[in-house]
Image 1 (cartoon, rainbow, N blue to C red):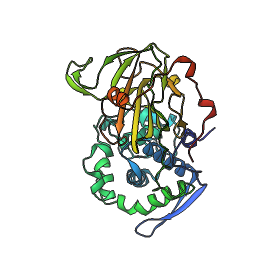
Image 2: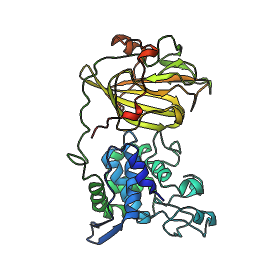
Image 3: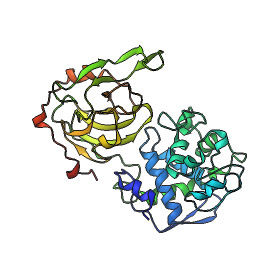
Image 4: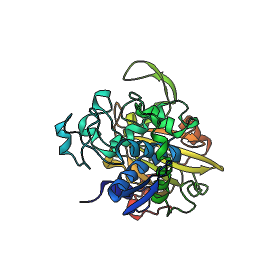
Length: 363
């Protein structure tokens, strides 16, 4: 059976290399720890998951590894005493800490998730990181839900998520977490802190849907939310189009995210260089079958990257487009105004190609 952590890495990870058969590391107190391939595969799952969540970065991944090392020794633990059904899921043994489960010893009773969810390593990693794309909407709090976590000691940040009765344990595993991350990323040129290769200046800017295939239905800015009726800020431009209408990359760039993300449904994020500035473009509400690129792909302006869907918080088939000058961590601007200001060209059906089978990956 294929290793699920390795499968997640194969889908275009920007960071994880091969998972070692074993690894020896020392804790801060000087204790020597031997980790096997299974434990390191769980570390790879945590790493690849964290790398794809905006705002986590290397520090956030190290904090998560520290927490999992402390709580479970990087093992997926069932808890047959509290939840007999947990033993039916793939696991690395049994734990007995109250009703805690899995890598981070999360408790269903505390709202972290169901037994089935918490016996999934990737779900546990997403729950630990939290934030806008986390499964628990900030309750319980994941790392990104804790204000100022970047400014405190890594052990204290891990404790803020885990809320342990023994808050000082996590710091002991910081050097082990760093050794693991270095081992998992050693083949990346320049090391784990190296920035991805700079994306060349885009040769042109295009509109993200074919000419004549769309209607602008909702604009950027404050609006009445169609679901809640509340007044909320809408960070994108909504372009209604029939299901399956090709979605095109607005500029030459690199794929940095492909997958489900909260109310976005299926989401693709591209990074570009336009006018010497980094720009991120978001394409939302795609179905899984309508996403035709993978993380790490390079794309050309006008290339078909997906199909219009209605997944997530959507009232009908449309593309929700966001443009973030400066990158993912910067605020969105009016996408239609940005496209107009950059002379976006229309593309007709004859120019559209689907090149997902001939991908060129950035090393």
